[in-house]
Amino acid sequence: MSSQSAIQPTRQADFPEWYQQVIKAADMAENSEVRGCMVIKPWGYGIWELIQARLDKAFKDSGHKNAYFPLLIPVSYMEREASHVEGFATECAVVTHHRLEAKKNPDGSVKMIPSGELTEPFIIRPTSETIIGAAFSRWIKSYRDLPLLINQWCNVMRWEMRPRLFLRTAEFLWQEGHTAHETADDAQKEALQMLKVYEDFMRDHLALPVITGEKSESERFPGADNTYCLETMVQDRKAIQAGTSHFLGQNFSKACNIRFLNRSGVEENAWTTSWGVSTRLIGTMIMTHGDDDGLILPPRVAPSHVVIIPVIPKEEVRDQILKACQDFAQKLKEKTFHERNIEVEIDRRDENGGVKNWEWIKKGVPLRIEIGPRDLEKNQVALARRDREHRKKDFLNMDDAIAKIPSILQEIQDTLLQRATAYSNENMKKIDTLEDFKKFFTPKNENKPEIHGGFALCHWAGSREDEARLKQEFKVTIRCLPFDKTFQEDGKCFLTQKPSSKRVIFAKSY
Image (cartoon, rainbow, N blue to C red):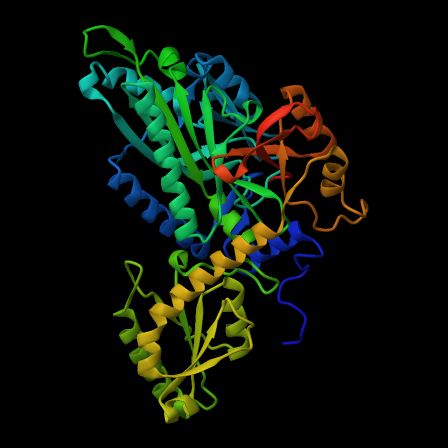
């Protein structure tokens, strides 16, 4: 392989196209025949299964139970919460008919015509607050029924105008938690507790350094009193909203008639929350850790931790090498790494060793191990880590390798978080004037925009109109009002010069 990278274009040359090429090279997903929808292939879906399994355990450990609700939501349900439907109206896919009739054309072909118009149209769920609220109104009668803690794993549809695999697709996979509580304080605690569950997962498993905080009023979830978020910076210095948790107040309980008899025997509305993350986490992970040779997977969400590549220079040593690989793999599988047995794959394909190696580099498998005749003679393996330069190999005694691999996987996990944290910190800047704000978010070459910007930490005391103007002019939004106390300091808004008690994060975003 020449010094040219495996992925073209590089991140620096064209980051959005690099991202698409990484997904293709790693064989993770592809666009389907349905515009804006994707086919998630086994390697990509394996990552989602690991994300799902870990989060599902965390939800259940905190008292939540899984349920399932209908894909189709009556339009009348969406109309009950006015601000909610306005927020999603332009993204809704609408089902209006319930059958097809075949009509033959003169040339013998058949055209399918929708018929059987529905009395009331249905929305393919963009989110399920309204239909889950209807169920809650039937299930909740007394304070004894509270709290009600429900989670749903499902697909949703939002008619995305500019789709991008994993980041923004019309149909995507996610989980949505929905809870009802006796008091506002209980619901607020729930919303913040689930935000912390997400934060711990993203840091400890996806190696994402996230900033938690609250969304500004204009960026708030439609129908929520407060939206809490997790923002992270990817390698083109844009922000990605990795997850959200919403305190819905009594807005949806009033709209959906979720009422209960309180401890004094008086009927009142419940206090509700909702929270969710999606397959967008996979896109965020790619953009955070990938390099110009492809995907780099944090070991805790790698479908395979180790791939063994047999080196077979002559046919007469094939059986001996394959047996050694099998024996090594079997011993390794008995080891555990963070509550999972180590997943090992032996690449037995009749393919050139260099081709195999590069395929696994692009797929981001944490460890590649080669075993050939010379290795057998020395009772060793050649081990390569995906977080290091691809030519670098360590030669380890077989028994030592088996003993050390769990700790090596943890080193890789830690390294990825450290790198991402350092990059994020390097590209955060305190900005106190509009002139500096403009410079920070304006590329030097408009015809060929280079990677620029980052997280601007600014004092803010502007209006919704001021925020909208900045979004229009610079394509920049307030990503969050951080919880971290280091952002709390007295100053003046960079735009209005009004007093401000804390800095907020402005950034371009996906």
